[in-house]
Image 1 (tube, rainbow, N blue to C red):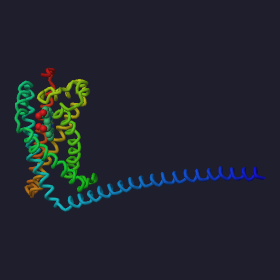
Image 2: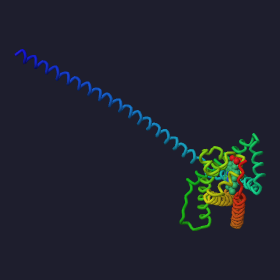
Image 3: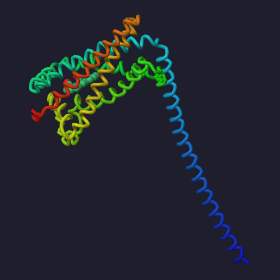
Image 4: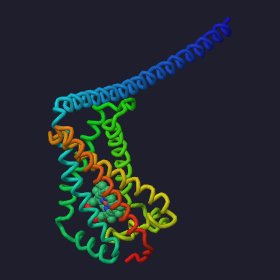
Length: 286
Ligand code: HEM
């Protein structure tokens, strides 16, 4: 009898122990999952708040963009486009025309780059107007509508203006990365294509894109870059005249369109000549 009671007590103790152990494990698991849930909900909260802030800042930005009168955008766009970028392109083409004499061109580049005021000139006269022009251009593109069904010269010009802007943005980025900031390109990439590592080797750093193995890609890129810039600028002169109220009569509009076409052809030919001047065999790296 005593043995039976003893065995019963022992089994009771063992079962009780197991139940207690299981309870502890269960509690542990629930605590861990509660903690995990808390962590997850914290993350979700952070993400939710972040999304809310981004969305509200975007809404405020759109409101701010909408509150600025359309004509003000057009005027800033036309001033930055004609005077700053247009002026820069002409000066840039004059400078690059020196490529007929590589040695002289490189010497001139070196002396310009030595001037301590040059970075300030670059930022204020080139990069700030360029950025402003691109940002406003994107806003105008976003606000305006392209309708390919309208069959008129004005509409075709409008479509081409947008298309050229798109090509310019892509090729200009490439141009700046490889020609203006060539020193900062990865060493392996520079060595692979023989790209100079110094900024003052102006002739060589352009020339490398017009020689094998890069010539096909380089020339196609530069011909489309120059043609797009020539079109965008010349058509911009005509649209700017409208913005500033200088093309009110039909005769004036016809005359301005002719002028714009002549500027397009002139700038395109000039750009192609520059590409040709930069395509000579010239291997010296210093
Ligand atoms: C055949 C055509 C072109 C050639 C050969 C050419 C050549 C060059 C060269 C050699 C530089 C580097 C100058 C330096 O290191 O100081 C440069 C810079 C630059 N190019 Fe061109 N370019 C051409 C067309 C254009 C066009 C059409 C644009 C239109 C916007 C343009 C925009 C720029 C800009 C913004 C810079 C940087 C200027 C600076 O930071 O000083 N380029 N280009």
